[in-house]
Length: 386
Ligand SMILES: Nc1ncnc2c1ncn2[C@@H]1O[C@H](COP(=O)(O)OP(=O)(O)O)[C@@H](O)[C@H]1O
Ligand SMILES: [Mg+2]
Image (cartoon, rainbow, N blue to C red):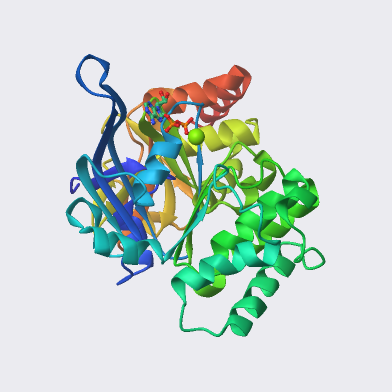
């Protein structure tokens, strides 16, 4: 068999896999080996370690992780609010580690910032606060145009009736929504939001999330949201988890769901809860296998379980390599040898270029072992068949 290349946990974000899906699309953000430190001398402390990240136009990323794990630091680096110290970071085509101040200024106009610390101006109305973003970014627009655009955005966040109110006359949640409108009004290509919905009730939170979705899908805006608010998890295309300054996981939500559903259809995993299935999906490794490869050879010891994500394979047996069956997307193979400890009882040859997800024997055993009786049943039924 050809050596699989590009091994990667299946549902983890994989630039190559994604690159094929969105051919020719440049990422909006590319971070490579990004390190960051605070303090100097004895007090110098590293808070980000070797982080690599790619974010594409139209993607909504939810970034989670314990307090102090470096989420805000990463967000402020991407937003050019801090200087890149070590590693490379490219945002909307601009290499930040090489950028001049005027290049950074230009770039900032294309970014929408929604940070809790971003205070509103007390002496200005909600409308004026929001319009300020436009005055900086689109000075060529008439004041009336700017006001209309600001009003539209305030309406979108549910504050159409409060455009004349000053911050003091607004609740915490309403102020937060003004800050959101201000971060979005100039139609940025990238939105960076730190806990944008924390202070919002269910309904306002929903309105903001819908706005994010619309911007991402319609205008291909990339949106990075740092949040602990699990009410808005459904908006995420990807969930990036940061722990102790390192990206611990980067999961494609849709792909994880597809794979979990495929796994759920396998009899041997039908006892697993959705959560265990999702955890298992995260353990799978994607293998790109060219057409005509022998993935499994009859008589070899079993080492992995396979799920077909894309492509077709042929099941073959005997000296004449006779075809017994064909398998396609969502089908799986390789479990028998793992369950019985016997050598492979057939060969598998790819009929097309295929993407297979594989699981090592150890992880397979762990997943299946969660209900021993099922394993015993399968052993018995296979035994009877002989
Ligand atoms: N301005 C700063 N000076 C020194 N240390 C900081 C500064 N900002 C954050 N830190 C430290 O860096 C680490 C990461 O912080 P932060 O990026 O705010 O994490 P998070 O947003 O995930 O809570 C924490 O240990 C925090 O104490
Ligand atoms: Mg933070």
